[in-house]
Image (cartoon, rainbow, N blue to C red; front, top):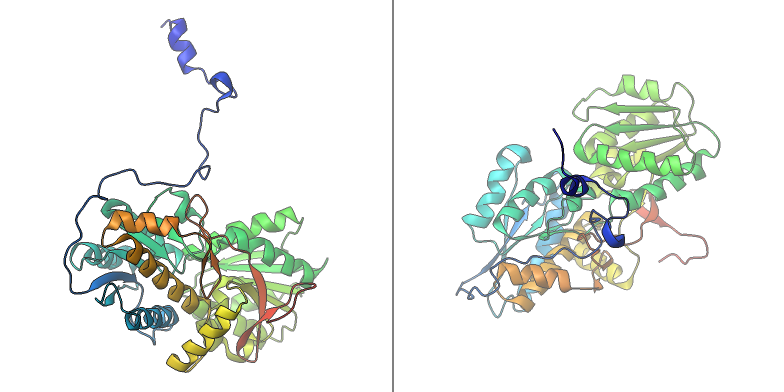
Amino acid sequence: MVIGAGLLAALTVVPGGTAGQEPFKQAGEAPLEYRGPGRDAPEPDVEEVVLGWFGPGDPDHPTGGDFWRGATLALEIVNREGGYRGRPFRLHPGWSEDPWGTGVVEVTRMVYEHGAWAIVGAIDGAATHLAEQVALKARITLVSSGSTDKTANLASVPWMFSCLPSDEVQAPVLAQAVADVAGDGRFVVVAATDHDSHAALVELRRALAVRGLTPSTLVEFDPVRQDLSALGRRLLEIDPRAVVVLAPPEAGARLVTEVRGRGFAGGLIGGGALALASFGRAAGEAAEGLRVPLLRERSDRWDTFVRMYDNRWGEPPDHGAAQSYDAVRLVVEATRRAGLNRARIRDAVRDIALWKGVAGIVRWDALGRNERPVGLATWRGGRLQPIAAPDSRER
């Protein structure tokens, strides 16, 4: 078969493209936009404004309760402020312990049966990926308060926003902690096989490689497994100076308790999930001294929120509660600006820049991520205490 010169030229990729143009577009070069219909739809007359909440609607849920408490507090405050033009906002929760099974049904019902104007929540990365698929098809804004998986935004869905700094931003902080604690000694990394822990592991390995750090042992384990005695014994066989744990709160608590119970007195470093209050409650004294990413900024707004939250719920908040509070308030502000129109609400969320939340500044990048700086904290006396950076003042 002979290929004509014109066709051959069309099939040939020349480095740099024609006239200096690159043949491919790099994701993140420009803000994602929605250019479809919907902005001209008239505003309906409603008695209440429904916002979907993809997460447990139970304040005592072992892992999602703190997220729901923060979201609930935000809703109570905005309704006291007058809601939406005198009409109340209402959070409609939907959740399943099997998000990829019945969870997708709950998200779909929020949109098509309960008339949600936006979805808040998606308290982890796996649930966020699921909700994102519904958001894209239904053209409804999704603001995640719990996902740190950067790939949720790499799908280039203009309706998707992530409030927490991603694993990519957290990983260098954890790698620095490893260097500080282990020095030139041995350290081990243990990661659960769930979606979020694996995503965090991928980023941590890259950050460690940049520093020329290699774990003496790297083990992945099933977080559902209850008996972790053999795993704990294996991790400590080489007498490491530091143990890095990437796992969901409950599984991480069991592993940390096992390691400490075997007499390990070295440094413990955990991923972002081990900065949640649910981990602290489950781990108890075993959490003492564990270093984790600080996923909220120190500010007067945080101090005020701590007092409000403690008055409402009788205990201090974690970053999950604070970020859920911020996500609800941000979506409410966007709705007040845009009116009851899903496309315009999306535009308003995107246009909100340098929004000052209780967990920190919200500044969207081109992909809808909020990559604010991450600090380091440690568990002391059952509470998470920030570790002051050099030449900084502790708040």
